[in-house]
Amino acid sequence: MILPQRKTYRKTSFRVKRPIRTFRDLEVYQRTAKCSVRIMKEVLPLLEAKDCPVKDKLVDCVLEIPRFIGKGHSKRFDEPEASLALLEDVMSLCNDAVVYLEQVRDIYADDVDSVVFNDIIQEYIFSRRKIFNLFKAWKRMDEAYAKRAR
Image 1: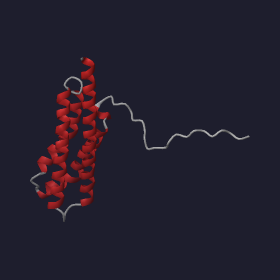
Image 2: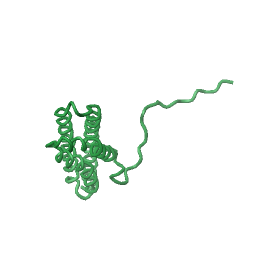
Image 3: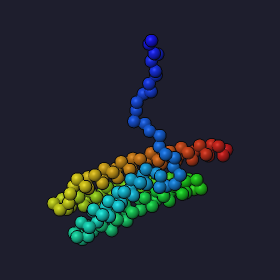
Image 4: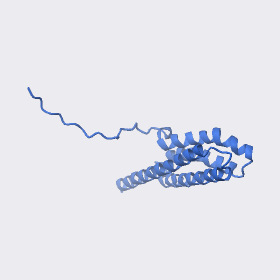
């Protein structure tokens, strides 16, 4: 007896993500928080030993990125313009973090592991792209709510 062939679904890397309930569920928050911890543990001791002039700017920058993501998520429904402005600030801070990390990597090229710096830099570049995607999604959502309100 010949069985009929079953339809197979196209195999892709698509996976259903868990629903976002808090800002801690956002992938960009998780990634940037991990990067900031990694910088504080691996990069900061080097900067303190070298008395680096951009140390304070880098630390402030990388610690504010996850904080602004959480703040933007909380303002998403009440103040949509403010939440989008915060995401723009986060994208700017990601760029600043990349600039500071590249400067430190290049200035102290003999004393640092460039693989660690390149890995962190790539993570921030990827996170910035994801934050921009989140920005576009929130903007679409705000426009949809505005249409419904009319």
